[in-house]
Image 1 (tube, rainbow, N blue to C red):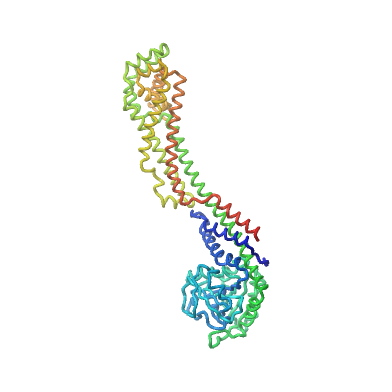
Image 2: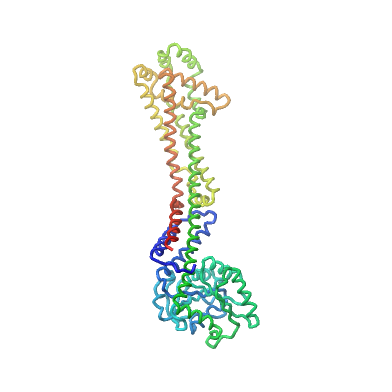
Length: 568
């Protein structure tokens, strides 16, 4: 793209995108997230260091970054073009740790403010030993024309990681890359990888091939030109410098750099040519910003999908647990052990069951005489039933919590949540007590159901004869009366108990009323368990709060990309 983009609308759109990227959350360690996080950091840095400053001042001097491999002669080239030593050079590596920005004296005001490279502190002066990588040293030099500035950057393949990162940051902030390499290293992989990124970005690039033996000027120059053409840099200016001795001042002979100086001078003096370079780089950079933002929107959507998957696992675990409780309430599993023993104490040898069954069909209204002749179910039976229901609720809740943690560990990004918050795999403190409280409250619900059903005079008399609490216990037994979960001799015992409990309630309320009462009572217990589980599920879901991402985040990023295209 050679047309120079600009305008207030585009600047506002890019600034808004910068804010969205700043708020972009990628908290889950899922596949590809490290790359996405790095892209986000790099993209923010490029917007801050180059795109926003350049859009805000399209007429600002062109910024050319001199970058390249270790020992390529970057500092010597900068010094020569500046007309004096402004950047330290030598055989010790790395020589350039902090960037040096060389500009014409008339352009000083453009660089003393954090207009470009806002993250680097400004330092002025001639101290060549200054090597604080968090700063940029500004040097005015009349050897450069007004309208263009050079930055001597650290080595792109430095042994120091911070130097490599700073070099890439500086190159991303450049209008023009003045890429420097040597006859011995021009085919190295690292420089070409960086040049590939330059092509993808659409940046303006010029190549300086340094220290070429006289006899190899043509063959090496031709080979490099061919490599550039093959990699999309056919039109990149190529300057070949022969191997030569430095002057007493440590500079290259002027005749060696004359073609580069003339080219830079034309750029500095020709606003149109300078605008073409800026427009090409800025346009290519905006293309890359759009592409990378779209990729970040996809990364954000992947985060959202993972959170939704984790939430679905949690929901399924507690939904299944509730279904198990609902089944356990009515499949007879609660009518085991001590419950059956307590009930048998009340029933006795079975003669009571025979008496009730033989007489109910003939004189239902006289069953009170039978009931009053036999003791009501003991309070211990109700307590045993209550304990059994509470244990059932707690056991399945524990299973849901452990299942959630186990399945979360199998999801990329989920294991870190469980490791960081191990309490999510356990029930919350006090859950057992809350379960018991809900079961006791459910027993109160049952008594209210029985009381409401026994309002007429005849039914009230039967209730009084047998006792409200006793009838409530019997109704609990009817709710738990199915025998699908039992085996062996338990089936007969529990089955007989169920028949007796059913007959007793039918004698008091009637067949249809008992069925309605049992269903209402069962549903009330399910409802209370549901509320209890929802609270526990919400507690575990809170563990996702620190990894929650805004579900509208990808849409906003894509909308920002669309707005950029319109503004351009």
